[in-house]
Length: 309
Image (cartoon, one colour):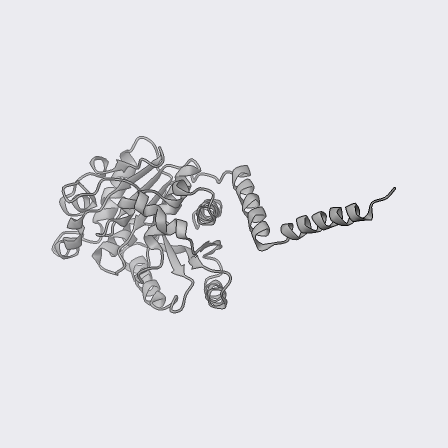
């Protein structure tokens, strides 16, 4: 004998399961699972020569230090040897990487002002075996003034970095230089030392304000001090796909810089904001979060694109 009530109950269970599969949460979970599997299945290639990035944007609050730290950690997690040079007197990158940067710590200030070799300044981050940092201390705040009277004041970081990379026994694959949010002599030193510029752009109103000035300054550096410098990478940060404004800004940036903008955008994320207070990148703090996955994907994209010819 058939039991129509049972059939109805069974159909209702099936329908509810189907409806769950079609909810925003279920779609997000499925998407994150797919992204994790894609990252695990295809390890990004390591560069044959060291790639040196300056992460710069004179506009504050765009995720510059956050981007530096998390891209470096993502690269290290994928097997690369990575060096972060903290050139911001606030020392936030040093904090996030868990390295010592008290006032009496030997730091990048001593490298630039006192010609201290980098080999005696570099510290290993406790986060990954292949992640290193040259810390910044409060002394760096006065370095802008002290640099004015020094010989080859724009070249001092580059000279020290080139000597370090030439003598270190194991090759570094990536160097990321975190700049202060200004266009002073410290930032000029970073531009002269680097080969590539990575610009984080916040997906909010006024995102492109000041960018033309930054690009003009980079062009001047390229013309007079570092002919190998170029803007190779632009990363969209604090992206919220639910808002029209974020989508409009993202599209505008992609229209202006189609070759430089990464496909990956970094979402707004509480986890990304929380991680530095624990002396960690979001890669270690919450490796399964959307923010962590996005930085891992951005790092993989940079690696696959390779250095510009």
